[in-house]
Length: 339
Image 1 (cartoon, rainbow, N blue to C red):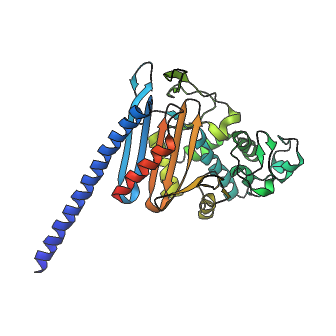
Image 2: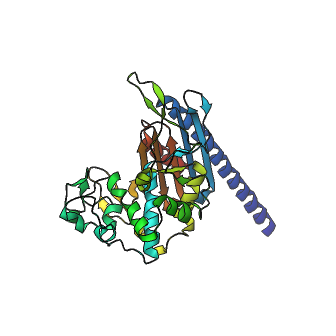
Image 3: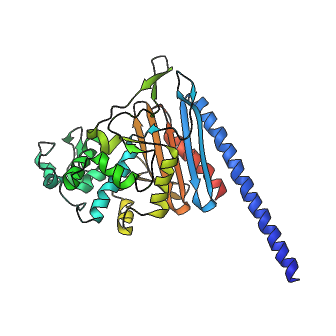
């Protein structure tokens, strides 16, 4: 009797495992078709998608379209993209590493670190590192539109870039060198860099002309001054390594700093999102996600994680008009089918 039960259990286990494999394979086919449809329906030169569900041992990487619309060279999922504002969470990581080392506090005043204020306004004396990381300094278009104490969210690239000056003052290293050495290298993100000049292996961006035809190339103007807000270049495999770090491994920061990084700091008016330490927080289908979007002329990207389900999604496209949020949300719904 025992042996019958044993073999029946074994058989049932094998059947369940086979069903799981079939479901995952079906999802990969569905994602392949979805990418092709996105490229066609949204009239994109190219798009790549990386998605993983750790609790189901599911991993997907795919691409559709072209690197360059002129040459029709086929896009590969591990081609190098300009990541735009996906750089910002890496800047937050760099600052929090210095906090862990006791070299900074988030409450430190910017004026005490950068002796020359970038804005001639006494209110700048109130601005802290935390204000910059959470886009709540009150600065908009290089002037104060709100009091820093109001903690009103206003997304600003130029203000965020001053974090590079903070890192240079504290460490003696340029922001690009610091992140390349202390974050990308330890995580073995060997295809990524904080770029200050244009990489030869970077795929070109595209735009649409007045007749709505795709044209190219469009290239981002790299420089050290823009490094903290916009200059990460990477690919899907490396962004998966970044996902593993912030979801599972958590080797670069203390547990306290990881908790702090994902703590809500400001409500983003008119949306369903909150701002954490350079990470956006939103809800979908009853689950909490953290991530960021990137947009510069010629490129559109996003990166999202769901810690509870160990899910990560990366989407990259080489044209700005890509509806990146819609795509990432639809992919998340598709991933839920295997949970």
